Amino acid sequence: MKTAARASFRTRLQGYVALTKPRIIELLLITTVPTMIVAEEGLPSVWLMAATVIGGTFSAGGANAINMYVDRDIDALMKRTAKRPLVTGVLTPRAALTFAVGLEVVAFAWLWLFVNLLSAVLAVAACLFYVFVYTLWLKRRSTSNIVIGGAAGAAPVLIGWSAVTDSLAWPPVVLFAIIFFWTPPHFWALAIRYKDDYSAADVPMLPSVATFRDTSIQILAYTVLVWALTLVFAPVAGVGWIYVVSAVVLGAVFTALAVQLLRTGSSAVAMRLFTFSITYVTLLFGAMALDVLVRNGL
Image (cartoon, helix red, strand yellow):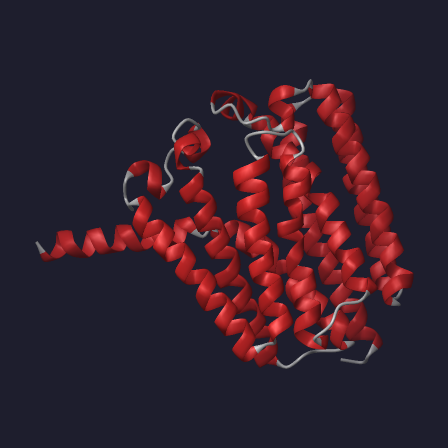
């Protein structure tokens, strides 16, 4: 009985972790610390970085858990999401919602107490936008769902900047735009592979309702826009050659993959583009942080 109880506890614990979508949180937080470094024009205190990352993790995890609570009906219809904890019954909807709301309360209190009020407000605002604008309003109604909904995923750069400066400025606004416009090609590339899932759940994700060519054209258009915005960021933030060279090279590779997708109409290329899009953000923000640290002799 004790072994069974331990196994049950472990299963539920894994279910709660799964509710937060850890892989998505990792991707969001990749942008937070480099933004803080640019805002500080050096290395912020370890405690401030840790406190901001912890608070951001709570907030993003809570938003993702609410998303799973709302989408549990369509998750059951899609192969990609059929093993989520609310579909399998590992957790009850009530337990999931209580956990999600609790995380958001903790996130707000944590950020207000250990970072600042502006960062706390931005984090909760991002959660509310993700839940009410994307999940409840747009996701099941519009092909622009992920385009507009991407604003929530771009919020960590604003939170990271405000954590250091207790204000906002043009550099984080440009970074917000970069992530905002990066989200559609990133997600649509993955959605190409799972378009049948979205069709089965009657979710109008672009690849499930538009032709491959039309989807690829939009992916290319957004990718070129992201490339342009990364170059705009250089004079706005006053970063140097390490960032500029990285932005040019990474943007060229990203765009080349988007062009290849348009020319070939290949799902395999779409997955390569999706995989590279994650690498792209990681390297771009890493180069941004490195540029600042090198120029300041750190």
